Image (tube, rainbow, N blue to C red):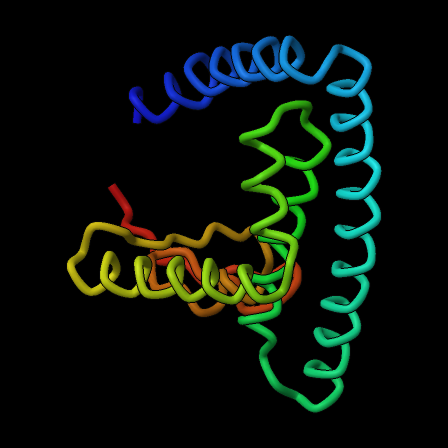
Length: 159
């Protein structure tokens, strides 16, 4: 985990700065600034349009009574891609474009789904849910169980 955080917060930004300076020296500072601004605006537009399409597909699935699991994955990828496109730099722009465009997003979503399926089957990834609602309390076994909004079922021993 530490190595991933080190990569995300030190190596990638340092590489982005290096690329910005080198490309800026090759094509000029104003052209580099224009490219960075263009990818930021284009990324925001693409993320918005793709996000709205995904949102409408989620609403269609919910109205049919289906669980929109794939659409949630695509929505997270579009959101992450939009954030990467808004971040100045060339590597983050390439990753963001890959996450926003539908063709490459499908491949990335398939990769993540298969990765998590393998990790769950091997026991390396486990999901836990924490809820404070009464529904969870009624279903959970234990000495104190809520049977109504203001009523708890409990056992006690006299000492």
